[in-house]
Amino acid sequence: MNFTKKEYWDNIYSSEKQEMDWYSTFSKIYPKIKHCFIDKSMKILQIGCGTSNFAKKLYQKGFSEITNIDISETAIEKMKKKYQNLSIKFEIMDTRNLTFKDESFDCIIDKGTLDSLLTEYPKENSLKMLSEIYRIMKPNSIFIEITWGTPFDRMFYLKNKKFKWKISHKIISCEKEEEKFTFYIYFLRKGKENEETKKG
Image (cartoon, rainbow, N blue to C red; front, side, top):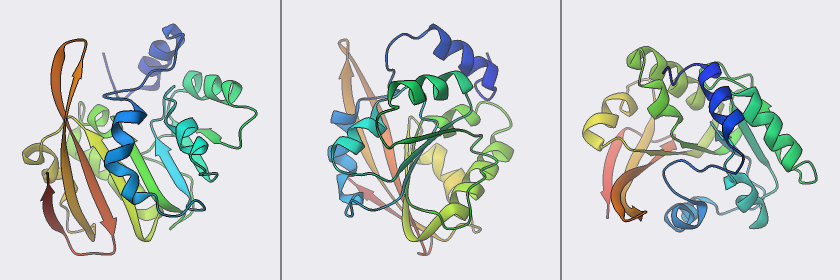
């Protein structure tokens, strides 16, 4: 298994018949991040969208400038067909090599893409991804990173002198099929000095 290759994800999404959300659902995550969504006209990018309904749920809340990318052509084609009547954009793209112009987005969301890239050449892949995300973020925009990674593991990659962002995080405990698990939401605000603040 190679979580960084499109062939792996094409195979995953070819076999999936329903929408699939990694880690947790929109209804459980949105209350924790809704303070970031203050303007209905803000330009939002979801990276590694897969077949999640996250974008649809944001659209239903009144956000209309939503772009979604994934390395998997299979996932993107499925989503284009499914939401062809909604003004939501879907594009095939590798988060390590984005084609967007500098300072294009007000809010960027990732749920699991960084985790996947860290499974192979972690320093190289994470730097490429985070550099591209930082490049396309507008001043004072926010990057929301949803991950299994604890601060001990993830701050090594997120706290880089190259990135002038303020970092805070929340710890989320969930229960799924009688199994309890924990994941983390990191908030990275561009235009501030590196600073970590823990929120309960």
